[in-house]
Structures are given as structure tokens and as C-alpha cells.
Image (cartoon, rainbow, N blue to C red; front, side, top):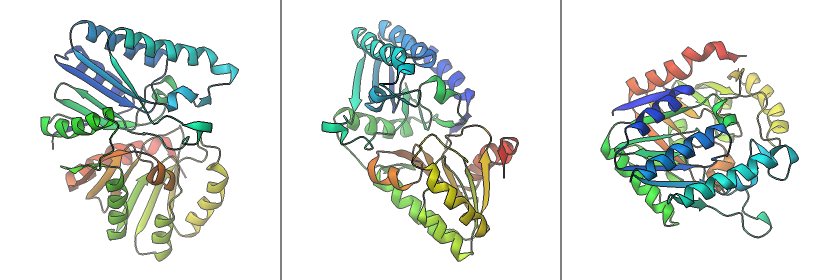
Length: 316
């Protein structure tokens, strides 16, 4: 598999290099795409590309209508950004860019938690998946994307993107690209098959399955997470969970800066990564996209760059 692991600002540099050489198509899907410097810069580039005749399509979840900069849209502090985001979307549409919105909230915001959490970028025959959204505060987080240099992988991701445009939900399981229900099944499969070690990174730790494995004491569990995350409802729960994990001899590391990186490495040979946070809410309510790989070289490379090399930003 030909791929490039792009951590933090490496992704933004790489993306704009690819956009500068785009010739036929640029398709993008994000949960959030906000009208701040990050969003406006990318939107301006997309409009520029559209004006040169390139096919540009954008999918943005309706979450962006209600939350910007991790703040509910009615708050005074984000009113200007809310207006700028709406204006940015309007200008992209006025330029002829197809902008599709996913998963409306419905009456009384009944479907608030039911988000399309995927991140997909297709630039000609290159493609990206991972966890990074388009906003200044997302860019300030620790996170990563995977760029694929294989047209076959891009065609699989294109299939998912086109299904979303049609309002369809599909469960991908092709050449390592997995989505929705398949991600949940792969996750449960790999952690239950672990023989020696599980290394997992997620900003929100609410996984009873891993706690059960820790109780059994047969597999070393290493957790990379946050002492305090941006979901207020999760923080009170984790204040009880973290002492339990340490009592069960789990190695719990906390990121010193906000981290949105999501991955799991099992026995240094199996990897599952992507948009999913590997918690109950994501598996139950959200649409997700990921990559599953059984390859020691891939697993060791990921572990080196996202765990071993990141020790200076981790603390116990």
C-alpha cells in the first residue's frame, strides 16, 4: 500500500501542494468546515479551482450550522463566525460548487448526536482519510490524515463519497477501507484477538470492552487520551474510569495539548484508524470511515510516529 502519514501541519502543507496541481476533480467531505481563517482560505482555493474548470464538490455535515469553534451557535462569542460560515457556503455555491449538507437535526433537534463524522478528500487520483476537520481550532489540535497514492483506493473512497451525495449509507470493506458497521465489527474483532499488547488513542474513552480486557490481565493495554476533553458530559465519567484503569495496570498517558488522534494498534501488527473515536456514541449514532491494515511494517511506522515520537507531548 502506497501511503503517507501526515501529522498536524504536515497535512495542510501536503493538501495545498496537491490542490495546486489538481487537474480534473476535487471532492471533500468534513463534519465541520468553518468560516474562520482555515475555512476561508480553503474555500477561496476551491472557488479558484472551480473557476478553472475543475469539478469541485463539498460535503459538510449540519453540525457546522449549530457548533463553531466548539461553541453553540447562539453564543455571542461566535455570532460573527456563524455568519461568516453561512456566507462562505453561499459563496462556494454561487461559484458553482456543489455543496451538500448531511444529516439534518430534524424537529426539536432530535437527531443532534446522529452525525456524519467522516473526513474524505479526493484530489484527482490521490485521496485522504483521517480525523482533521477544517477550522482554526481543529488545526490547533494534534491529529493526522493518511494520504493514499493508489487510484484503486481512491475509487473505493469515491464510491462512499458518491453514496453520501445520494443520501445512501453503505458499509465498505474493500482493500482495508471500512465504514460504519464494519468498523465496529473490526474493532471488536481485533481487541478480542489481541495476544500481547493494545495501544489505543482516543480523546473520549468510554469503552467497556477494553475495560473488560484490562480486567482479564492477559494483554498489556496502553491508552493515550485526555485528562479533560471538549465534551462536558464525558469528563465526569472519566474521573471514575481513569483510577479504575490504573488499578488494572493500564498504562494511561495524557496528551499535554488537545489531541483528536484516533487509532488502535494490536500486537504491533494490526491497525485500525480513521474518523471514529472508538466509543459507544460513535458506533451507535455516527457514520464513520476508517482503514484496517494487517501489516507489521505499517503498524510499526504508525506506532513510531504517533506514539514513540510523541512522548514529549505525553505525561502520566
